[in-house]
Length: 204
Image 1 (tube, helix red, strand yellow):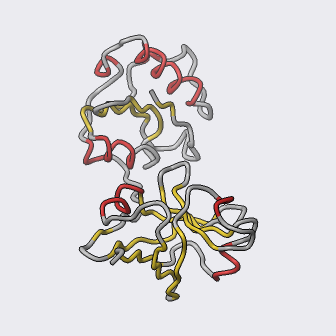
Image 2 (image 1 turned 135 degrees about the vertical axis):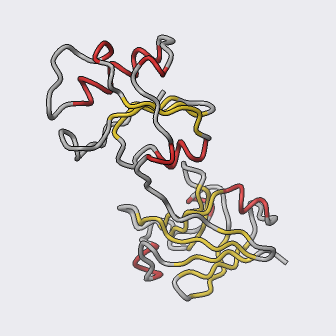
Image 3 (image 1 turned 180 degrees about the horizontal axis):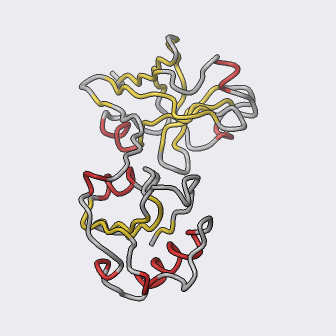
């Protein structure tokens, strides 16, 4: 069960929805926030939260997280059928928020930098399963082309696997490839920013 309340459009025309996927329920605004997760897990049913029976008696114009989303999530967690919450809607009509998807080829993977965190670590959109799919394993030296520069970077378990100031790559807590510098700022050292292209070459 995921209750998702990032809702700058509260009180406007956006819909309040609940989504049932193969493994989860997601409740929140129809603003694209929940779409990538639902699409990845597989849609089953989507409803608009329109049944006042499963809302608080007085619904605020600015706090739907408390008055609409939280009650709906609570009822679903207790076993309520999702279609009791309101009318079913077509998943194709939802607002979409799409992240760039990596592409895997015979000899390389193409991706991009999703973001740079406050430590200067470079987070890509390349998941671990794609890396392992082209034969990458811990201890390998990866040939990585990022922002037009070809680098040879060790693929390690954690930051302390290399000396201070050494560039490394690892799998982060979201199972994505991260390029870092032990106790340094990889983004500044490598002059890499959000949206830059990343290519991982297959080991030969």
